[in-house]
Length: 431
Ligand SMILES: [Zn+2]
Ligand SMILES: [Zn+2]
Image (cartoon, rainbow, N blue to C red; front, side, top):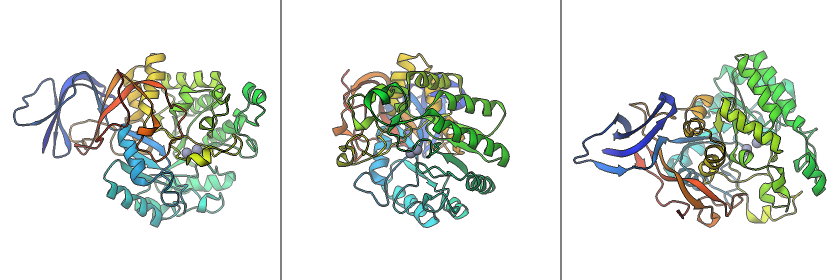
């Protein structure tokens, strides 16, 4: 089986490659990248005018299966992933039951294999049932295929438990992913603490609630030698702490979500519960610091924190609605709109944070078009405009703050092992 992706602008930050060329796929692998090639007898995908990048990797996705299949299944989440250009996604453990043992880890891997869409890498829990008390079965989960551990959404408050978790994770080659939040400092908060929370009469969460745990985890990373990944970083202070840890040479990485790059707490005016997530949308100063940290390399990855919820659940009053928004099908458009089209961040840097950046943070395969690699490839149009229409999403859920937005940057096709997986696009091009 041979396929030629012809005439695209190939951007692969893993090998500092940016040129218009033909990419040949043979037996599911990248076989060559040539300035021009003979396409006699080959299946050809015309990529002229398009960007050809390594398949995108999302380190932070909630798939809701097992337990809450009415919100999302592994298959529907994986379909949303490939529609958004993601060939690999990491599945967070807060399912029912929690992925805190090898049998749940294996269940996720089996379901993903049946779906034959995006590759799904399970993230195991740090503690049993994510209760923050006893450590989960990390060694068994690692053996079954887990790539990292996290109690995302239920931060480990006991620092001694976190220390032991890091020692254990280090010994088993697992990255510790932390949703950094001091639950006492953040108690009762439903949005960012600041001018808008006062204006709206909602209880706020202070930046310090995030930063105290970022600082703690960095100190514990230094103490234990563990690899620590800060999930959905959202404040200027957190960025500063991670930057300092990196300069010290600690194994600390971090991710940012498209919604924290695009929106601020001013979006909460109007009480749309699709602006409610944890960590909350922050101030304009924080957003500016995140964009600067993208530019200077402090941030390793763009991750969606795709968090499906049923419309009935999001329809509650602001204080009572659950946290989280979906993001797989808008990630590229939002990231390009904000970072590249509005703030002139080079497109190769945006691609780096969707490919080799996340691959290295979790030591995942992929993120590169080096000859011999599995042909996981995302082809997209960086400039065409489209309008976000949730009714066209592959995800089972509809909770996006970007409904009706016009975005520039649109996924055309997603290849995994050299095979097309996108099928029909989840969004309509309007220009
Ligand atoms: Zn989280
Ligand atoms: Zn999450």
